[in-house]
Length: 417
Image (cartoon, rainbow, N blue to C red):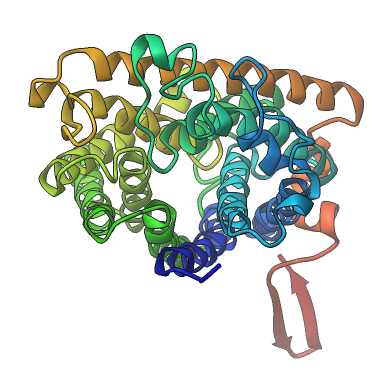
């Protein structure tokens, strides 16, 4: 079968999305203490390694094949992808694998600086198998929330082009649950105990995430017209969210921050993910502004409610994911259906989006709680108090990210941080 332009674009997009996982490690790593950056980056890299194997063996099959009441596909239908050799579907399998990698890696930001690496390595395959792949099947694989699914046929199919529910809401919910299971870091809320140690890394990571997100959102585009709309929306929403976030900081705190600018970009990217192919560029700007303001305010809720979401996964990914998913009930263009409320479409699409949000939150929340408590009760999920004080890089990996030489009268002294 001849290679088509769409096939080539999907392969290029898969490479762009694959880059997002190490970029996330850089983004998250800069937000941690200096003695936790390597562990943070290892959590992203290991997520890519583990999920890559799981996806080939059974993950892709669970996300697309067969039907178990609309909940998940058969893990054996495409086991090892052997039956797909010689077909272009392998391209789709590879593209979808990169989505699964970045989704589970997102969760790690909520438990930075205090999780056992062995516990994380056990959590990743369990969560991808029991949460991500089934939810992908429900939304994209013809399952529960699709046009012919039990809920989709009643409330209408959810619009989620690139993963507002499957990626953002599921990972944000899991992040909240794990943050509660592990408890807060030592010194949580005591500034500057856990201030970001390298903001330039955060901004570089955010820039790379924005770069990769064009493949993330537009990789599945089927026409030039659709790809163009997705591309400009993926530009406009994060740009507006950046402005919304830093403007909120200026009004609230008296000064905009670099961390806020980087976080605003990510919030806008998250918000536009489900709607990138279904809203106008003007609506994308409005959505980005709303997401930037709302998320800038939401990240402070962890201090009010006392849960330690270390790197604001809940405040950015869960909140912006919900905002972007529900916004479609109002601003969805009437492309394949009635459209959102602002286009005279009635409440139908809003109800479909709301049901999808609830399903994603309940599935991810409940299953993550079971997995987290099971790991916590067996091998333990959290490092000891002493190891946390010493730094997770040294205690879990026997490495340090930075090594400085101080030359004095007595010679050279090696100081590790």
